[in-house]
Length: 308
Image (cartoon, rainbow, N blue to C red; front, side, top):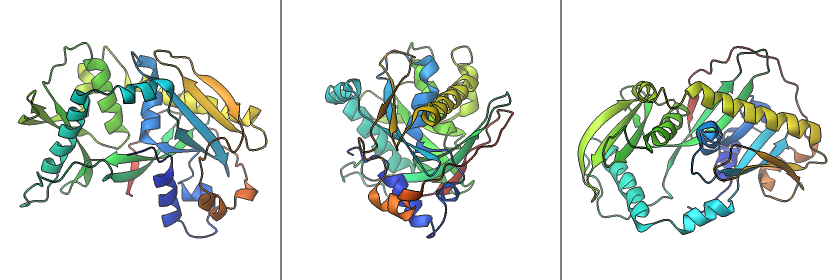
């Protein structure tokens, strides 16, 4: 679908929040609100290769930072040049999910067109804190969920691949993104379908996140990824608090194939991060930045989850 900004997140918060509830309370005392994709982009930065970089605009409202993704020239070019083959791969993956998550005894629908407008979202909260005596960060985020295992109550991720080959040059980066994607949703295993070049799945197997991490332990370290998320978000908080004036918003950007992050300020109305309805509900004119507590011991617990 077209970029909808933070619409889904804002709509959910409004739906479940009682009038006169402080925003901090409504978002589980979070410092940052965003989509999982934002966290993934920050997490893979230390290991980024041949990527499109990222660009986010950040607005502080009632002591909470809202992060919205922006399109860059590199992202738009990649989208424009998307090959027919890549579109087929996306289609096959989504069609695979309709088979895997069909209700028991139900015949999967093989005739209806695949739609990217239909999705199930989960709402999560996570606390990140470093090993040293630095203040923790609470993040409230939303992620698309493939399915749910009724027997365990855990979310499940479904993937397809042409061949389970860990030796390919692109494998470390590919499986790093899989690992992070699942970790942020509290998922500990993936149902993997091995397919032919024509999209026919020939084999099903479970892949545990622990096994992926062990397989690529010499290529990447999840601790480095989580530290990257913390350091970037903490730098955003510090920069914004020291340099933000009169409701200004902050834009952070990492150029393609670069690990450097550039910060810039834009006017309060440059990008529609928050809806007027959302601002009105939480009393836009009385923002009240809150103080933060010091924290220690970086050991983020599994994300708490709530059905969206």
